[in-house]
Image 1 (spheres, rainbow over the protein chains, first blue to last red):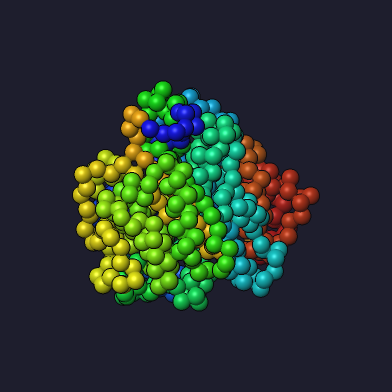
Image 2: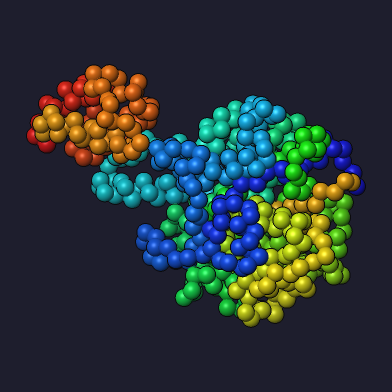
Length: 417
Length: 83
């Protein structure tokens, strides 16, 4: 039984997504359980061929080709998943919640990088004469762009903005949406994350310069968290938006409830630009577990953040081991091994991929784990094949990012309590 | 460039902005904005494309000349004579 009244309890009632291996939750879940990778090889300006996750979805399902051309790739992804989420929730007509009571909160690792790189490349064709700099640059690169494109498409007149939270941004936006609902600022929240990062050579080149860009002859095997042969991150594009409502309203309209956002926490390492820090991750997980009124042994699935970097994976494993000491019913997986690192969308996409476990009681596997790094040993790590459990009632979702940002979200299966 | 060539360039640029635009039934004497799904940013796209292709600068004060297909052509004929 939750300690909060129903109007302060926040539930997920709709999911829209675009991942490198699916454009809807059913296919996504099927592919995750099958360990079907969405990673392929792309060729990018200046950096050449790299493994990456590219989304394939019906780009003109909810807006015209002209509008996609006007906007950004992030906006295109966002409009698709926001519409899908509202349709899924049965709220697309805004009859229950008017458009001025809806809020759009989108987590981004970065924004404007792709557009700026493209503009500079275009300008180079004109000897860097800024008379040829595009009038589209400003509206495409303002940080609220993806969230704003969603509001323009849906006619939503409530608040919209982006949450900059590095690779913790998806979770951070989800938390923001829940907080705005609890405060009564909005009555329905579209909260999630978007990544268009595969369009930026700079992101790949920077990871390479840090020694953190994955390389493998087979792109589908490039992302290999916890494996001794892991050598870095596979960058993916992606998007996922959740429809969030207060529990009382969701129950009143007999909505399908994917789960309750039972606990969440964010904190800061306050020590390094790029290196993660396990002890602070432990604290963050503990804070979220406390807020949910749970104990570590109550968690059934931990979706790890691990990206396939040497130190990042070890830090998170240390953090998990220190907190989940005697938890025989806690199983651990990693979604990035299958879809790559969807940056600002990672937290929410990975959470979405695990939510169907409340129905099918399966834990999707971590793939590409052929030789476990002893430093990454974890009890109940689900490897290469899905694990069938008796029941799954709680999911803890880790999402961490550069400059020391940590986020943890716990979702509980909705029961009558 | 001839009048027809200029007209085709304008239509080609509009088509590039919106490849679903119905250009077959366009009245050349009526405002483009009233007949097509074009807004101020689209007109800036037309201005930019002409700048890129023919290095012509169209000052903001002259933008009203781009209102209809015919007025576009009339405005551009002397400026693209040598193009």
